[in-house]
Length: 288
Image (tube, rainbow, N blue to C red):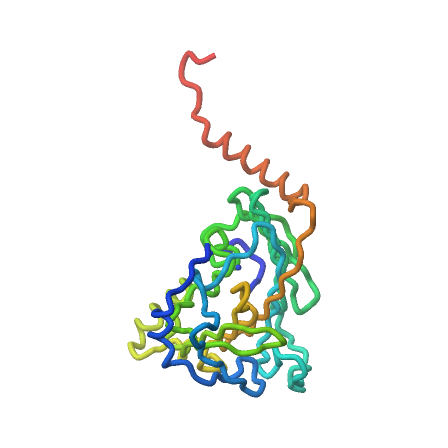
């Protein structure tokens, strides 16, 4: 978002053949807890036990609400009962996103992202009929988001773009987490497929240092990226990439269809009218 943007930090089920799992089962092993809590072993799936279906990360329902809570305190436990690191109580002076609420309504062709910031501020972004509208920093007007980096940029393709790296070779087995069974996926940070933004940064870094690695450039606090998927729904539960700890919570959406506020609709109407006028060719000689 280049024009004074806000600061902001998202598949049809087919049974997976058991043979595919047998090919990756030997790599299943005890995983370090992604949130700093005591590790709980991820148990490799046995014949007859559930294994992930394809696609590995499911899409949210056609009408869905979910919240992603974000933290950089990796000692803060995602598991019930663990204690928070006292250092996490120190209030940072840097403004960061603490959570993003997603609301999706496929029938209405609308999606809203509501970002909650560490200073208590809240900002909304809307995707309406393919147009992505966001607020300028400090709520100083609206603008159309182009191809610049944005949490919402990839939402037309997937609800969870941050999990595009997940493959079956990363599957490590089952474990219990907060009273439910989860599928565990993990990969060394330097072997994880980079996002498009990260790939651009790496390409730039390698021009000056051919030995640069993702770990050297992004400096994750842990070297093993970990993802928990709910074993029943295959929706994300917890994702720790060593830079941000994300915890996902899905709630029942409102019975009413998702409706953008009047200021968003008015902004889009005015913009579309301005585009129509600009693109209308001038009348030629002799035109009425």
